[in-house]
Amino acid sequence: MPKQKLTKTKHQGIYSYETSTGKKYSIRFRFKNSQGVWKEKQESGFENLTKAKMRKAELEIISKNDLSLIENENLTFGQWYKEFIKITSPTWSPHTFESFNSLYKNHFYIFANKQLAKITLRDIQNFANQKIADGLAVTTVKNMHISLMQIFNSAVKHDFLVKNKLKYIKLPAHKKTSKYIESETMTLVDDYMFSDNFTHLDQAMFVLLKIGWRKSEVSGFSHGAVEIIDNNNVYVHVLKSRTHLTKETGKAPKTLSSYRTNHITGFKAKVLISCINISKEIYEDYNLPCTNDSFVFINPKSGNLYCTDRTTYLLRKCSKSLNINITPHMLRHIFATDAVNSGESIVEVSKWIGHSKVDTTLNIYSHSSKESKIQLSKFASKI
Image 1 (cartoon, one colour):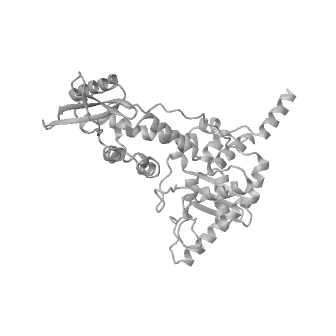
Image 2 (cartoon, rainbow, N blue to C red; image 1 turned 30 degrees about the vertical axis):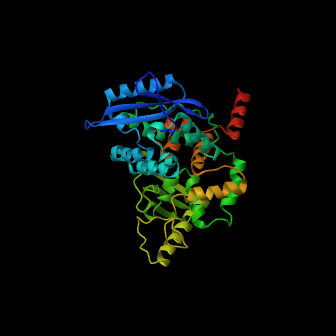
């Protein structure tokens, strides 16, 4: 409440007071709480009498419909987030739970001490703008906003907010980047990855990414998932995936089609065989049991398993050195594109990379390339 003297107006419960910027209005609203005890709610700072009257009328309507909306009006975002987690998380997967807590800890915490009911659309828009200015991708900020709106919508559902007024923020158009790299650039990537900058273990990770494995499948590659036929022939099986939530034990692949076997020959087979032997030696050096369930990619300097984001780190290092953008998932797209453009059966390509639907491989994972355009041009010239 302002320190200035309040002057009654002809409207009950509405007062005026003078400030350095002119006349302002405040309201006093009396109501019985859920225990039947009289309480008074005071608000000030209204620029004109009309706004003060509208707010008082709103409080009168709210008090008749649901007192909890007034009683909990001082609830902070941080306090509600704790309740939101208690109410909602029992139905979540561990990944979803970890994702929300990470978002709150690293991003949403700036709202923690602000009253839930007083967070404005401008607050949310400024939050999104700042995240984009900090370098986050538009799609990342969009997904963050979706999670933030889940928290507010849940507050509405459980009668802690009248409605969610914060949905419609504006985000810049997402700039789509190609998930395909032409063969000339991939040659540079190959040369760099198979240089002395990387160990044999790192190069084996790169080989598995190049044949279309997901980064979680590479991280979950175990000794029981390889069959060495001879020095030039290896069968590798996708039996587990491994993420930061399952970094110790791994987990089964997410779909039945993800279980698969790939036959590798030649140079790539030699890289994988070398990696398997090195991994066994590391387990022996640290007196660790090496079984079929033991993961292949282990740090020779510590005897600990490599971080599940090791492949991302390797390709980030490559990207920085070559001044390009390449990620583990892009290699999966590149494999599918090159295989299809080389005339391989789309059905076999789909099975190889673990898709349950051929349409996914064809519509999402295969891209136009310079070579495919040249071949199409030659075909068009013949007919």
